[in-house]
Image (cartoon, rainbow, N blue to C red; front, side, top):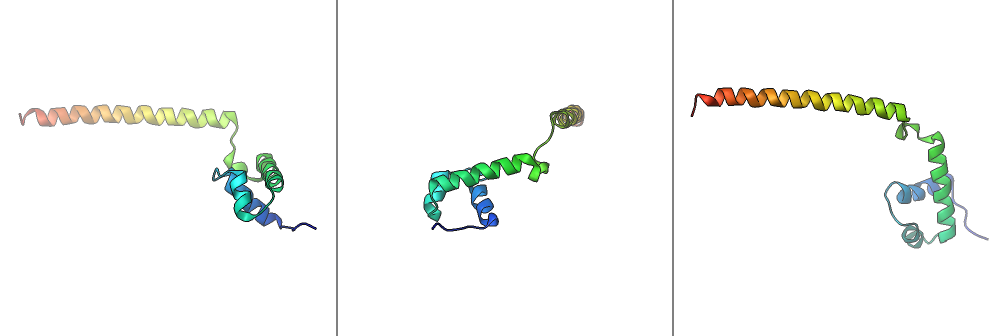
Length: 97
């Protein structure tokens, strides 16, 4: 009869693959877990996390567009401030030449 692992351990091992980008085969070999078992754990973990168990990681397209618009406004403001500082620097250094 095979070994039984608790859900916390399965999630930890699955995170090594999903979030750290490690290969299933390598992790399975290191931990002496059959490849098929690891594949199933990872698939279940991916389904669970996409189903809303970690909703803070996933945003809707409208939220993404809103955040993108805010970033674009911030970039434009910073560009304007940078231009003002360039002009001020030119004015202050003009008399020193």
